[in-house]
Amino acid sequence: LCFHGFMNKTSKIIIGIIVVILIIWAIAAGVSKNSQPQANDPIRIGAIAPLTGWGAYWADGYVKGTQVAKDEINSTGGKLEVVIEDGATESAKSATVAQKLISIDKVDGLIVEFTAPASSASPIALQNKIPMMYDAVTRSIAANNPLAFKMYFDMDKQCYLAAKNLAAAGARHIGGLIMNLDFAAECRAAISPKARVVAEW
Image (cartoon, rainbow, N blue to C red):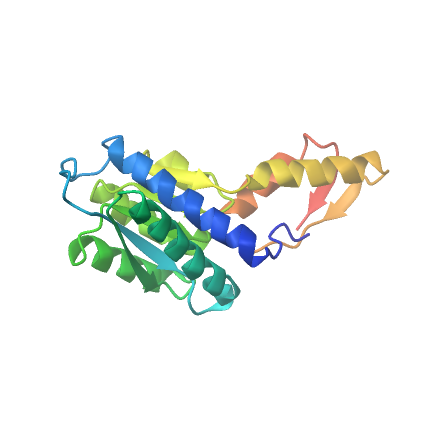
């Protein structure tokens, strides 16, 4: 079962706008380690983007959406800077990039795409008291980091609904093919026994 469908460019741009606005809200709420920005200080957001790697299909809309959001905010009097770095859609590179964005670029918040990059960036953001928005299905990152804000659907709910619908159609034994990432355990736990089917992986 595949839950991560392709989105058109317009949808990606809208998501980019929402992401940046939510990050600014988090910073304004005072969760950053830095003092509240002064009126003339720009807010600097670090974006760990999937410019390369398996998630690169997301890159074009992601970069354009971020630019649109920045331009819209700045055109109405905001002062926003966005530093985009390639996390290569993998853990080690994303951790290195998170360190660089926080320690060198002095960002006030992070945006991270996909589970593996977000999982590796989250402890670094928490250690530095930097708020982080992440776009992934797993809830474990937000559960372990009070400064992490999740956007995107929950894997356990989707797995439960899929299994429930299969059970309603008469299935009593289902097979699951899923990546070995954080959300795999969430999916397994949600399917059995709640959906009244036996899941095999």
